[in-house]
Amino acid sequence: MEPKQSAVTGMYIFFIKYRKIVTVTAIFLLVVGLPSKFYDRPIFDESHKYEDIGFLFDTILMFLITPVWMLVSVCKATKVYKNEDEWKKM
Image (cartoon, rainbow, N blue to C red; front, side, top):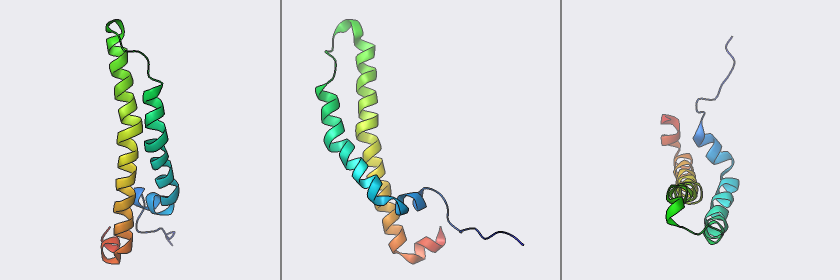
């Protein structure tokens, strides 16, 4: 006899189960993390050009792109969860 497993696993389940925590974390990163990271940035000069580019890339990736992606994924997962027909297709 095979063990019973849910038909749907993956990120949608995670985003539905922990949507409040993910939403609060993403908003915190956008509202508090991004401005504080830019206020504490090092002084940009020509001798550390590539280090400065790396700092900007890392900051944009971690404090702007990732929280926005998390919020969009939570919205998608919530929309799919509310519509049972789409949920069954997954």
